[in-house]
Amino acid sequence: MPNDENAARLRQFRDSLGFTQEEMAAKLEIKRSRYANYETGLREPKRKVLQSLIALGYQPEVGPPLIPASQLLIPIPYLGFISASDPVNWTDPFESESFEYVPPEMGDVRGRFACRVASDSMYPILEPDDVCVFQKDSIPKIGTIIMFRSEDHRITIKQVTHNGTDFVLHPINNKYEDCIAEGECLGYLVGVVRERGTLRTTIYDASGIRP
Image 1 (cartoon, rainbow, N blue to C red):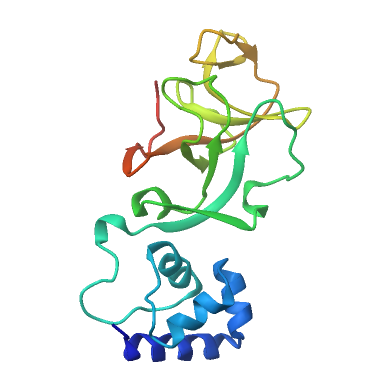
Image 2 (image 1 turned 120 degrees about the vertical axis):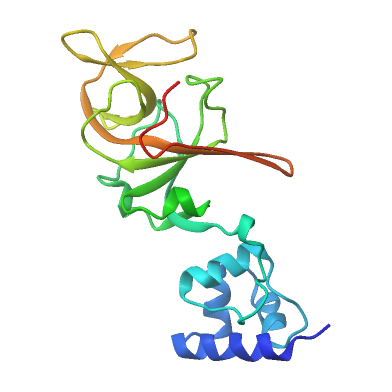
């Protein structure tokens, strides 16, 4: 059923940004024809599109929420898939222009960023395709899982331990070996989001996740 009120609100919001329909559709990563249907009231934005609109500053109608509170997600900087075999060319996680949507408790603190796991070195705690949320911190917290950049700019996710002399990067999966941490800590793991089909499970610990 057409919703003229929501359609008018969306047109006004786009006009306030000075965007054409084509430009707004590009921001939302959808086709212009699909976006045009929102402004004519023929379709309602789905959850992911609505979340992107809210991130741009859009305010849905007052009243019953269009998205259940339990499903609301917020955007934080996203680095993509992280694999220890690939060097990266960014110097700071917050240089990323991409975003991942995570539960509010994982993203409502400054200094949070996300990536997806691309290897099994931390299995079974972390599985490939898990979304990992990190709190930026250059000081390793012993026992926690951290994101670490080696001196050759390769990124890895490991538990950090100490052997009495050096910090050590420890993989939980015993197929892999420990190594001395030579480089810099980028942050410690505070959240994990695992989606398998329609099932979503989360782990969150603001003090840092430990195995």
